[in-house]
Length: 464
Figure 1 (cartoon, rainbow, N blue to C red):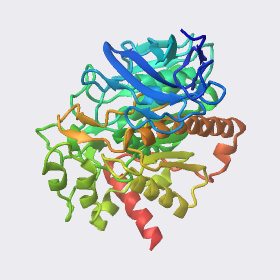
Figure 2: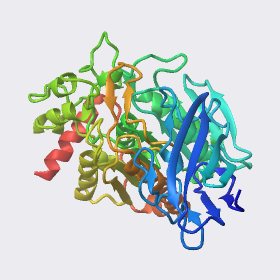
Figure 3: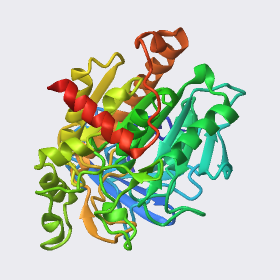
């Protein structure tokens, strides 16, 4: 055996921290294979790639592209062996149960006269982060708190059409200093199995609970949502502007949508999703003259939901009726999207939101990160991005989230630091008093669905 050595730095850290994997004292020009093995919630995930040592006998994944790699790993990417992992049996769950349990990856190096092994640990939660379930005021949530007495700025996290909780994101928010409430609104204990007819007042109660129970620093409460949750946080910011300090919208919708794949079958996928004041909020499929599900329904799986959504967007009057009046939001807005989103056109939707805010001279920062080749599943560093085809958790339809592993991994790695910087600046502005000084008068909360439609009509009239 040679005197080759393997170093991994840092060995043990939060999941969003990149690692340096480096092999030294190889023969110059020698080709080695580096493989990984991670058990994620009882399912084994693996990857492998080949590398050629430089003239000094070194392979450094922060510098070197693979000679060959699994799942599209073919460029320099320090964490390519993690994002290119594939499961040995069908799985999309890349975290353990419980979520705060670390992910341990075995790293193996093999080559002529070379046999080395090491480990790295990725922690979704920092030491001292606490978790507790919330079952108060009709709310169903999981609260993660940072170490220390606080007070901390707060974030309410909302999942998409899969329902349930987004605990990994809440744990990581808490690890970075935010009191994080992952609030379920369907497909969780004590709640409906479906997204249909969800009252927006439920989320207003969640915002009220955060302020009353947590007393967040600077009264800062942001909302962060993905997919249908991205649509939802924009809608909540418009409906309850005084309660929302900042909006982080992952792959959002710019219009209100019907129940779609997460609908109650008794109501149907063209039925309403959101209620306000007991009345349905107008959605884009309602009275739509061009919308058809055919591009999504027809042909072999996997299906691309985006194709059906694009037919609905061809009716400008329906789009106008369903457009979220984002100009009512009284705080900074961050948008994240992918150009190859298979679920709906998040790039187009983010542009619509950005343009509406520009036209309204929105007095707060607006940031938009759009990832070329990225799909619908923008998470955070550093997790596998190879599982693009899935059965929808509610409808069971076999669909694709779009994108490809490499661009999706780039979106994961770059978006999370962007979100943290955005929130840091928003908290600082709030603390200095600049956040409240940028607008002469905050918009009052909308009380019913008719008022949402009226706000949309007023915004459209102002543009004429």
